[in-house]
Image: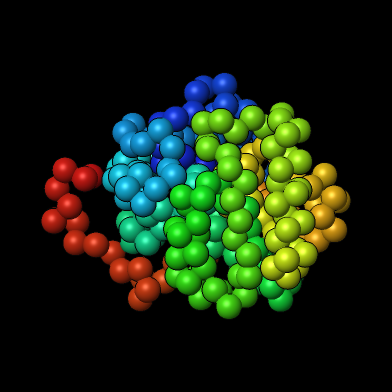
Length: 239
C-alpha cells in the first residue's frame, strides 16, 4: 500500500473536519491517505502574508513525517512551499494547483477557476503566470466564500458556484473549470456542478492525491537539477 500524507499548512481545521477529509481522501484514491496538519501557522491561507507564514510550519512538519510516507500532497490550492518542500524531501511532493492547471490544459484549450474571495484574485493570476498557463487561463472569478465560512452541505454555495461558473463559460469563454480552494474541493459537489455547467469541473483533491499515489508507486521524484538539496548545515532550528 502506498502511504500519502495530505499536509494542511494551517491550524484552522477542527478534528471532525480533518477526519471527514481523511475519509473522503481514502475513498477517492488507491493510496492510504493520512491528513496531517502543522503545529504552527495561520488559521486559513487567504493572503500573501498567510501563504508565506504557513511555509515555515509546513517545512518543519514535512521533514518530521517524511520517513512515514511515500508521497506528500500540499493541502492548499496556493501550493505554498512547493519548491522548498521538493528541495527538502526525497519523496514526491504534489501541489494541487499545479496538477489541476496542467490537467485543465489537457482537457480544454481555455480554462478558468473559481477562487474564494476578491482579495485572492491577484494571487490567482500570479499562479497562472508562474505555471506558464496565463494564456490558457481565460477566467478567474470569486464566489465570495471565506474559508472558515465554507459549508460542504450548503446548496446556496453550490448554486453560487454554478452561477459564477456559467459567467466564466458564457462571458469569458472557459471550456473547463475547477475550484481554486481545497475547502471548496472537499465540499465534493463536483458532479452536480459539472452536470449543471456542461463542461469539465475538475476536482483538485482527487487529482493531486492520485498523482501523488502514481508518482510514489512508480518512483517518480523531482529532479535534483531543478530542486537541489539545501545546505543542511545552515538550516539550524528549522529541522
